[in-house]
Amino acid sequence: MPHLILEHSANLSAKADLTALCHVLKTAVLETGLFETGAVRVRAISCETYAIADELPDNAFLDMSFRIGVGRSDDEKKRAGKTIFAAAQRHLEPLFDTPHFALSLEIREIDPVLSWKKNAMHARLREPASKG
Image (cartoon, rainbow, N blue to C red; front, side, top):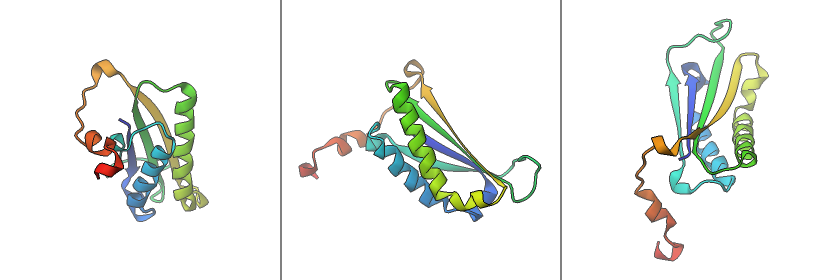
């Protein structure tokens, strides 16, 4: 953990660079200082089928779901949420010039009893820089 999942209307791909957004958001997650590099996952999932508000063709959405493990205070979670949302908002700012875009973020804590993980990247990324 954490996993930041960007679910978006398919038409958003033509309006914003979502690959760049994934990188911007990964950087934002790491800048919080709350998560290890090897744990961060950011991915965008395009929704080909959707109905938004009054169903105008220009309407678009991006819903961010940030799944994290337990162990952070409410203040830390709020800080992370504000940091991530602000980064997304900056990247997508031109979309707010029209009345057709909705952006949202929700943070969800994963129950450790109901979560299984195995990550081979941690050992490599936790090595001292001198080991390369």
